[in-house]
Length: 493
Image (tube, rainbow, N blue to C red; front, side, top):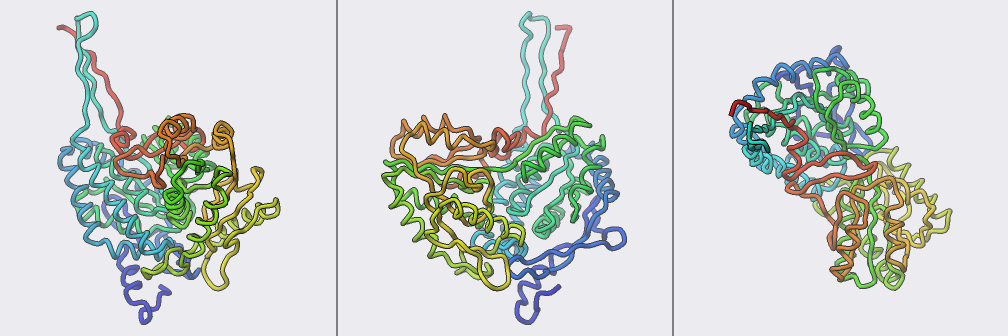
């Protein structure tokens, strides 16, 4: 551990308290040969600690543990499955502050955002604790009257879960919650940049009474080498992944061997449309949420701003004023509003995308550069007159940069918004209800924020269309991804 216990005793205590081993079959254990990798603090670039680096053999051991536990867990009373999730929800809320600080240290987001994520993450457990007892079926008379149709919902079986670094706890609970509620055992692989939040969550689930083998956690620096043997192994029946579209395509190919049930939440390229009749105060507030949540490192982040020419100058001025006033720094204190990007590679990508737009004629209204010193910081940035051919119009920025392009025609801006392979979320601001519904229907995305800058909610279905993924997470739809439908034909009646 490189955290100074004299200068930062609470930080050191929180990191020390998090498990660092693999969880396989209910037992914490070191990786073979004591293999490990470092977890860095992106605000300093220095190591926080080391965690176990699992081998493919240990991944298969975790899958074996999940497969062994599956038959008994599938029979576990739904009410008790729900009660385990409810107890875990309460434990998360009791440890809210420590979990938030741990997340800030490994991911970089400010404490205020980490606190919000911990609450958001916990809500998935509360929601699915209630859904566990609402798994229904059907019973019907055959059309010719000679038999009956009995339809039942059953757990799909052992599930492989892969989570990203940007929401290290919420993306876990959004997958683990419905899996547990449905009666599926799991093996989860958190991102190597942010494994500590997931390890802490696993410890909470054990304390809440989750039986051995139902949740297995394998951490690894090399996700591909670890996961591919499990995906191609016949004991796994489900794969749920959140991450890039490029990786998602590879996982679909690998999943074809065993015809796994697959759900994927992949990349985004969200348009944010401001019409000339929009409430500009509300639009700027929404833009700040849609752009700056999680330092812009979110698949739902507004990536392309299309602002009507009649209000573009005023909108840009107000947004730049708000962005330039944000306090940037190490997010462990309440006054910081913008933390670092996750690593040097992401900082480099954001820098390249801004340079590309400026080279093509975009104007920098505020920001437009990194920050001297340690850590992976980039200034909150507003660009205007961004040409449509700029790279950031096609690629996820994943950083605190708002590129603004003007428009005048409704149909033209809809076409521009849809001119992408992605289709996760879109945002639009207008006072005209008919226009709002008309444009919402025309936008090619799985979610739409109509006059609001955040769409994520544990009680609502989350997911995209086109290259943004398959399936839905959250809401009453989220548990369906972990259930199979069985039809029994009943004769002799």
